[in-house]
Figure 1 (tube, chains in turn purple, brown):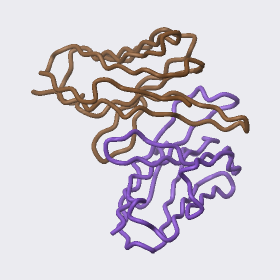
Figure 2: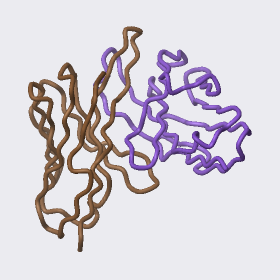
Figure 3: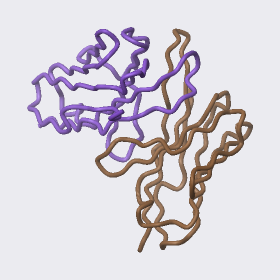
Length: 116
Length: 115
């Protein structure tokens, strides 16, 4: 068990470019979450997968954002036409649960995005 | 809409002191509450998860309590050490009608333990 892995750790991009982040959850975990965190704030929920199904998307997730989890394993988060306001830490978390969420979430170390 | 508030926003104390971090939430219909630690530039590490049926949960020098009726939780850190310096966040779950769930976080308490 190597924990939740996120790549890349840092990404600097110019406004208008597309970026893609990858998250590899703990292997047996069926739930995967994406959060965004800005300086001095707690993480904010973006989207959630139960296995390969995307069950919830926050209103924070504009149509420039898309997430996938093919085969219920790793997940990718793509941001198209990046804006400076997209600069943040993007965190991935996973958990193993059935029914109501009652197991701890395990977070990766995040991908820090800077849009110039 | 669930709101989570953490007080104080920042705390600086000498090594060895016992301290209490506070978390309050507006909707008491929760199944659990989780405390996390975050080091600068890193992800979150789960410290304690308290089920709604529990009043306390302990791990080493950490003790977390939960009072659902008043919408409060506290994290007690005994005999603080410089290595405890980090941001501590509490979070409560939400559930959608579609079967999804997630966590609502507070903004955290930034803790500095002075050697």
